[in-house]
Length: 216
Ligand code: VGL
Ligand code: ZN
Figure 1 (tube, rainbow, N blue to C red):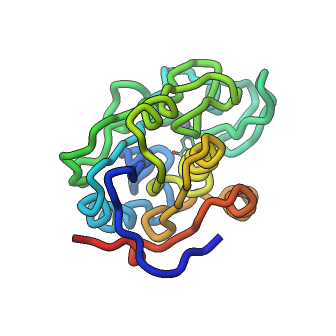
Figure 2: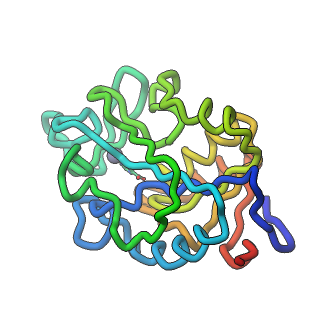
Figure 3: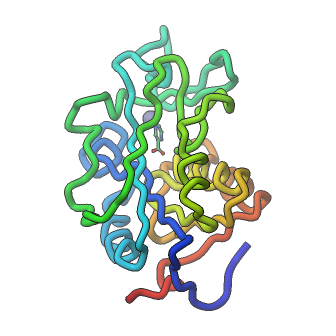
């Protein structure tokens, strides 16, 4: 779904900035191509939002989503875990490491919550809301509902994994949901970006550009 006209963020809108962490940025363990290009638009956007939430991928060592935790597997292979198919990644965003830190180039001192995800060793969590078993909740839905938010705007890394899954779960939870395309960048492995765009469109997530958000 596309959207015409400008959007003025209000008191019931929240911006979710997904996984802008060193390991997803140039030089990181799972660097997203052109990943640092999201930082300037996110910093501009964040000034227009009173309410901002950050997510942080936060895996224990030996996490089930790491190729290194499986015999005869390489990064970007897939495997079957107890909840279904799982893409395997280079080790990344290990709890307490530099790679897991949120970029200091993000300038969002007014961010209100950092929600960590992917900390259960046997379950991945692309989404900020629900883990990959599609059952285990992070608590974010309850937090946003309790605070009375109605619209959710998502941006960050990576468009086709954590940003898309977060937006899909926001829509499923009943929020009017937007994905800000130029403030996000994709990994795009094995057709993942095309699939994510199909899923987002089917779920009614609105794809917008950051220029559509009224600033100041
Ligand atoms: C992500 C792959 C593995 C993401 C996190 O932030 O999109 N992708 N873990
Ligand atoms: Zn991860």
